[in-house]
Image (cartoon, rainbow, N blue to C red; front, side, top):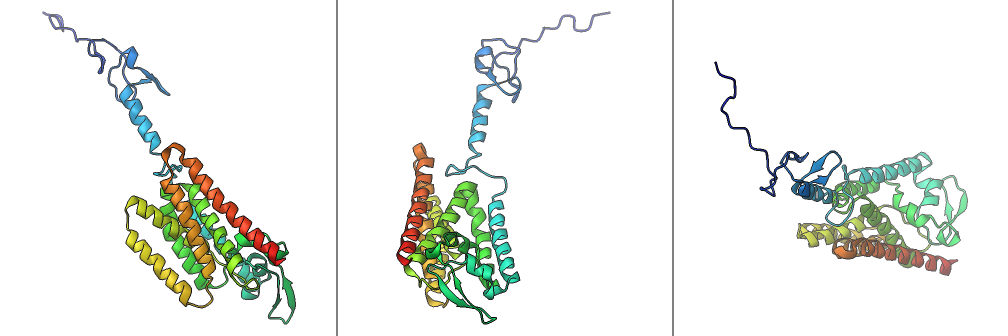
Amino acid sequence: MTTPGAGSVPDAPPVCYRHTDRETWIRCQRCSRPICPDCMRSAAVGFQCPTCVKEGARSTRQTRTPYGGQRVSDPRLTTFVLIGLNVLVWLGIQATGGSDSRLLDKLALLPDSALTRYSDGTVALVRGVSDGAWWQPMTSAFTHVELLHIGLNMLTLYFLGPVLENVLGRSRFLALYLVSALAGSAAVMLFANPHAQTLGASGAIFGLMGGLAVVAVKARGQVQTLLALIAINLVFTFTASGISWQAHIGGLVGGAVIGTAMVYAPRSNRPLVQWGVTGAVLVASVLLIAAKATALA
């Protein structure tokens, strides 16, 4: 009778996968490869090897978008919130009289105060930006009356918004949208009839088109298709009646400038350039609006 294992050769101790002359009984918590004390890297639990640490660092970097923004799990969220706000304002206007709504007169952009006659025969002075309605350059971008108007704007936002949020990140996308809207309002203040109301998200939408066009050029994407879309909308802008070309052009230019800063900023000081240019467009828009309002007062 023999003893089990008698005469067998004992297993050799494992050696470090990077230093094969060093015996070790420690293994990487991630890949289970043996590692010596010189290769041990502290992890949340136990130790990891240098290779797994590098792979983890690469995974962490992938949480950033190509242009430095924080990658989000659902790039549609901001778009849905913006659409929801526009719809809520539209419902409020419909519930208070539609085109005869006093709420509309508070939110729509009116550079200079003007008298308005309502359907009940009353006449009232509607305050404009020159008379202290400083909120109108922004609130007008969330204001619609006609169903077709809000429908087309929100449909375009639905298609463009998630693409840009996925590429830029949430905060940069939101900044592009809102500052483009303000740039459109600045152009309205400068070049439109000061006694005519302007409303709608079109300035912000054109800003998204301008920003996305720059992204497409940088990424060598479907530039021709996007430029054709912009061209068609510009033709419609200048040929159809009742459309504010000022808001469209202002938003387009503002969005293109901000988009250029977002995608072409050097990596070494990317946030500084991106937010610096965005802030410059914001400040310039506010100063132009204030200057025009002061001149009209």
